[in-house]
Length: 419
Image (tube, rainbow, N blue to C red; front, top):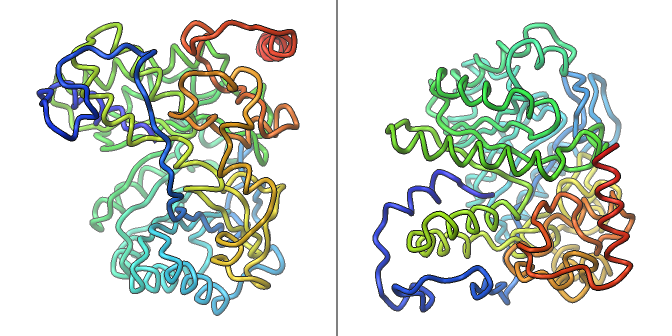
């Protein structure tokens, strides 16, 4: 995730010549010379566990294809406790409870409390409509610190997407209830063709409502949100990023305490860095340090991210629902993740030599790790092709199109976006 506000704040920090600044000192670093070393040691993954597929809503863009119904064979309370115990022993740092709608699980506070007891940081991703004050306070007492609430837009558009009149107001009430209960709460807003049209208005609304943090999440092609035609074109993405970056700078200048961030596209950090190099090369050195901490390959699928669904199937990340590495009812997660010889998992952990097309010779591939491999797999049927959501130009990635295969790939992307 790219914390735009933190990155902008770094511009006001002095550039110190010390042993920890990666040898930058006072010289201006050009984009072509800026190395982003990929960490050699695989970290323990942050795990998203979709505790249920059931939901109280029926959103048109649901990434998990959830509906207001009961689903069979979901992990029991006892199986969930055993899973958390295994995750803690494996030293997983963070466990995100998601759905469906996780608040439909009556044992959710028990899961949160047990994770906290064992030293795993619990978090929740919710649609926000069920977060009354009592529920928020109960989760706070159980040891929860952070909540992410989905908000697709403003007003009637949210109600229409969710198929539930009053859903928008319920989300705002849930947000306020979390704040009142002492929880850290963020709003997550998808960047797609619907939210793009009202992006400026959303940012105005965020300031008006004094929402403290908003994460704008790029579209991942999965569930009922799997249509690439719902995504932004590359030019729209660049305009959206420019608006977010400019508004974050404006908030900082005016002392408005609102944090903006983006997620699900590791290219954003590179785009911001290139923008800073063009506008303020000296200050870009400070931002460079933060970008090194956002190594996409380390944070990506199969390495720093893992997914577990409601029936216990393990996936390379929370979105790769069509690829199963194993099931925790049969084999502990720690063994699946730590000992698997699965070819996709092995490839994800050494992905750079496998990258094709636009990504193969990109000078930034160590920084973004080839971006989201699941998008490439969904779009091209090949997890090693270029991520279609990469919006950097050939000039920016430092290469032309040397052969017909890559030319054809770019033609496909352009024709799809024009359709």
